[in-house]
Image 1: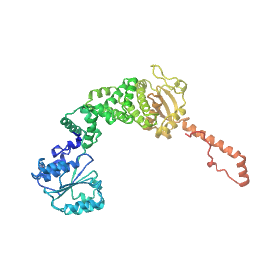
Image 2: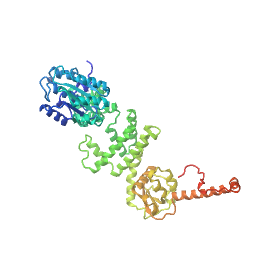
Image 3: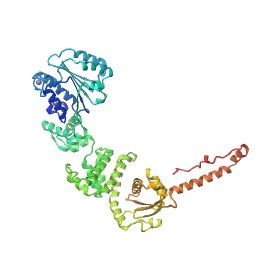
Image 4: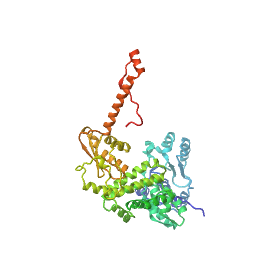
Length: 525
Ligand SMILES: [Zn+2]
């Protein structure tokens, strides 16, 4: 026996079988049962949520041989013929492929004749917004004075493109986007009827991937049945969809918290083998970190989750500050992923950066709490020797602030770094001075960016402290001075040039000093 696709096999045949459209179904049922029939209906909603299915059930309700009601008998020839798509007085037109006015004229001309058996001739026009203007006009005439025996059921994904003159003559129903939960529950029912085993989480993944469309969910489920053979499982569904499971992300974060670099790399190699997208993995990682951050604020945040226990264990391993830092690294890692030699390298480097930051964060916090930089100003020479008393990773800073600033990726914080005078570096804290006229640069957002750039550079959690006071020098001041010197030198060499002298003497020429541009080597700061 040939395989019948699930969407067709399990297409709802009655209003009660329709999932997630309770309010529209209620309104239509009431109208049918109270014999308040309208001659035109319009269903709008996103693709795959059941507009034409609803239209066919409505057609059965109108024409069932047992009489018009919200519960068609499903047994009579009319009900059976409509289900089988062979009922002569049900005319379905896909406006997307029949936009022309001629098609519409044919259809409407035919509408004048009485139905061959039942009480109504029913026209279902799908994607009605695609009709041309003249086709709409032709339809409007019939909508204004419809023959008693004609019912129009229009469906659209874009009601805003349907002319208001048409809209105003229809009874409108907005079909709701189905929740993932609704879809997953429905898939579970179908699998039970099909006698196919499944892991409930696998259905949630399929439902999320279908983003509100039952039709899409069912066709993914069709593929999953073909792919999984015995049982619909999370791993196989993820593999099929190329999505990654929460488990992998959770395991990555556990490996970071446990400082288990080996485990981390083996996980990424596994992901690489399974062709899991590294870009969406970084996105997923950022989302998970975001959720953990929310869980720090909201008690019982993971109460509903099937992974409650493991997520709460994970939560205990990170402080809110660490989560902030990891989030930054994940989003920056995603931004820069395509700059990496290859995607695996880019992904690994991002994770290794997370690994490198994890212990440093604790240490640097402890230090800043115990020692205040303001009290002990140390000369750059001394700072060149890193604080290694606790056997931590060492790193170098030779006191050359300007050179350091040039190496950093600063963006908006560049002015702050360039206008700042470097005073001291101790306990992973840079003490800086800023002129009162540049006070606006000490805005917290700039300070945060500068701290992050320094932290990224040294792979340590770095802090800065800014004092607003007069400064002696700064990278900006130095650069300005150098430019002025260079300009003076250039001016002098031009004035000394024999050809220029000749021009001045012979032709009364004048050198416009503002036009002189020194030739710079390399990039300008
Ligand atoms: Zn019937």
